[in-house]
Length: 226
Image 1 (cartoon, rainbow, N blue to C red):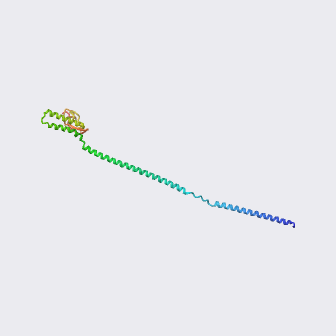
Image 2: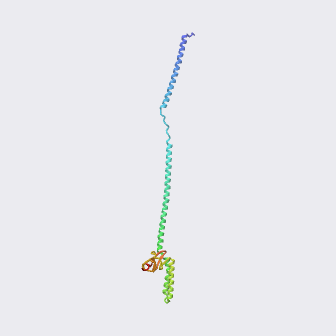
Image 3: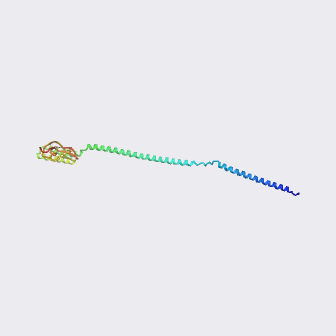
């Protein structure tokens, strides 16, 4: 084998250096390409608008429907309660109306009976008086004293009947003050009595339970003559 010359060694060394330079350039180009691609991808990601994830609307719709169902049920409950109260009030009204009608009918019946039998008790009290009068008339032969005593007895019976039924006589005495509610003045006459007082009683009056049935007829004093 022949020995290599210095020129050959120098050429080999230069070739090796060129080869290493070429490899380094290739590696730098590959790195630059990778870096450029990486930057391009990042720029694309940044430039691409991010789309928000769609919200789940089905849950919101379900909650809204549930709330509407609750409100609807509450309205139905209120309506049912109002209808029950209405029925209760209607029943009370009908009962009260029927009761008022019954009271009105009973009152009308009682009023009719009161008008029909108002004098029933008083009539029963007068029957013995009539019996006494008939008995006195049936006596063919009797003395004046017996007849007078019978009349007095009959009068006492009549007074008792009047008293039981609050039928009182109005019989003012001479000199009593004239009362226009109980007395009826026939005329004014000169009298020794004080002016405006009773001068003479002409006819008794009667009251029934403080109600005037007939005023007493009287003559009123006009005072002494001048």
